[in-house]
Length: 496
Image (cartoon, rainbow, N blue to C red; front, side):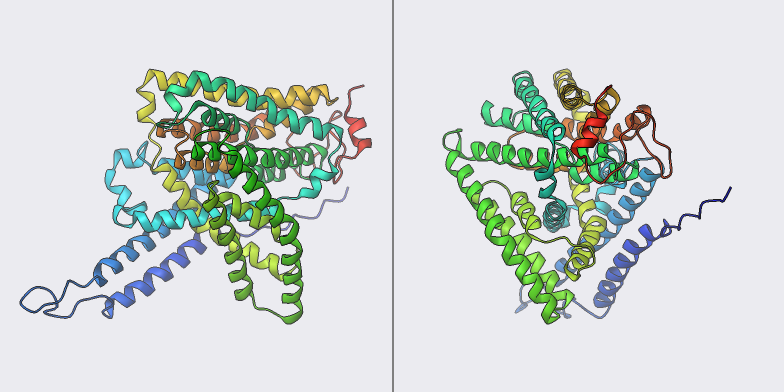
């Protein structure tokens, strides 16, 4: 028997730590050299005394920049280590990065050693670090939009269409119903019940599209109908969820659902114009750049201008900047091997290693589990929220899939996959917190729910024997491999 050829070795794991450290160390070195040669240091006699001018701002600015650079280096290195540990434990690296952000907060490290906050999120540099965290969030949503494949929705078959609706509608309805039970504990100050209920229903029905893609790939399901169906359903859920979130935020801003009608219609019209007219323009500009040999630096600048311009417009509309960034990503053609895609990939790589972990730390610094564990009412409300989220998404998806004809094991596997919420849920929750739709305690509880529902995905797939390592022989009731679930494959998945 011939032995299979050895699998090519991937890049060493140490590169994931060394690269962020080298970048951060270089920045610290440049700044230290500049300070050593007198950047921002006042001249002798420049402060105090008669005729002296106002104190120089140089030392203060230089000190703040130094704190920012050191914080970025510490966050990048710690988050990378957390990602590597998560991968060793069979979890997506982003879960380790999220957990790292929570561990650095007041619930754990900052609560035990308050001085650690000055290393990872110093008080003097909070405004600048907050801006960088928002930049990381916008670039992340831009990347999510660029990975969104609308053609999957157009190709979806009977089973996928039914499951997409069930996996969104059932948890949304359960979330709206449970809003009456947790409104007192979770609603933001002065917020009405209607926008809070819409937001909670949306939070219950979210699926983490980017994290799900990694889970599907690492579980060996990327080229099988189960993985394809999960990704297509998640894409459909994302579209509905963003619309529902925009409605909730518009209602919160306008004060009533009727007053929000104009904002929602304006946002919908803007999105339609951007997608219909903007996509051909962006593709034409990309072809022109290829013909004329436009440099990568200019392409990068164009992508940044596109993402932040649309983010700014949607923020002015009152529906949050993340929607504009997502729309901008949908405009950009993602074709492997092209210069634009290469620039996009590098931008996303830098953001995921440097700025997005900073967003997780900013979230972790606001999550304090000790405030929740000591309050019986909050514990009860949190239990209701977690149970509603898991039961609504998992059971709603599984029952709908089984009704559509899938075997029970496949239906449960689909429910488990779509129950993963990950980064997308945290982004939605942060938007709701910033808009005043939920309070800090609700944010803490729901962030924990997002982490738990994502962490349970891998073990649950293994328990259902649906994880497919490379080269594994499929079980009798596993779906046949294929690039997409065709009607014939859907027929094969129906029980005998």
